[in-house]
Image (cartoon, one colour):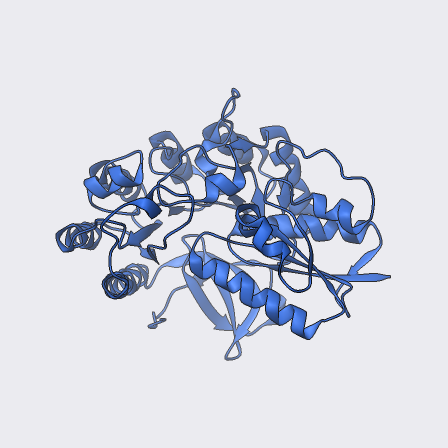
Length: 408
C-alpha cells in the first residue's frame, strides 16, 4: 500500500474536488493516511491571506514530512506556477482546470485529456455533501482572480447531477449543497439552467435536503425564490454576494446590479419566507471607497433584512484591474471598516436567531460534539445544540429553538 494525504484550503468547491482526487487514488490502491509518500495541497488564492496560508501549510508539511513529495494544485498554483515550483519539497504543480491530472501523475501513467468539466462531490462528512455542478466564471469582476484561475463558465448537466444526488443519498447522506464558482450560471450555452435543475431535483425527490450555495443577485430569479418557498427539499437559505451598497463602487467592481435591485431581491425572499436565512458577502476598502461611500454601504446593510455577512477586507490581487487603480485605501482604514461591519453582522445574526426563538424546526444532527452537546443545523441554517444522544446522529429531528446564545 502507498500512502497519501490531501489538504484543502478555500471554498466548498475545493473540498468537493479534493474528495474526487482522493477517491480516484483509493480506487487505484493508494491509502489515505499513515506516513504519506505524497502530500497534495489543494490551494486557494482568493485573497493574499489565502495565499499566505498555502505557503505556511506547505512549509509546515515539508518540515514535518521531509521524505514526502509535495504536489500543489488549485487556484494559487494556476496563478503562480513558477513560484510554487521553486518551493522546497514541491515536485509538481497543477492548476485548477487540470487538477485531476494529479491522479495520473501520482499513478505514473499517461496524463488523460483534461475534460471541459469534471464532476465531484465531498465524502468526508456522513451527514452532508458538497456537490460540484458548475465551474469557472465569465463576469471578470475587477477585484477577482478566480476567473483567471478557473477559466470560463461551464457546468454539469441535469441528468448527471441527478445521478450524483442519488448516489450521495444511497451512501446515507441527507443533505447536498450545490456548489460552484458561479452556481447561478448553471447550464450556460445549453437549454438547461438553474431553475430547470432545481425543478428536476424536487421532482426526483431522492434526498431530504438541498442547499444552494452562493448565487449572484442578477441570476437569482423570482421563479427560483418562489420554487424554494414551496419546496420541502430546497432549504430556505440563500447566500447572495453584495460586495458594496454603493452603486458607484458596484460599477467600479463591474458588478451586474444596483444596490436597489439587490435590496428588492432580499425583500422578495423575506416576503415569501420571513424566516429564511439570507447571507451576503461584502468587501471593505475597495480602491477609491470614501468614508461617505462606506457609510452608505453600512446604512444600506443596517436597514436590509439580512441574517449575517461574510466581510472581506479588500486584498490587492496581481493581474486584476483593481490592483492598478489609484486611491488605494489605507490598511488601517480598511480594517477599521471591516471591524464595524463584523459587529453589525453579529448583531444581525443575533436578531435573526431571536426571531426564530420558540419555533420548532427540522434539524439535521451532526456527529460534532461541543461541551457534551450534539450540534446540527436547522433548515434555515441556525446552528443548534442539543443533549448528546448518539442515536440521533445523521437523523433529522424536529427541535424547538429555546434560547439563543452569543457566538462570536
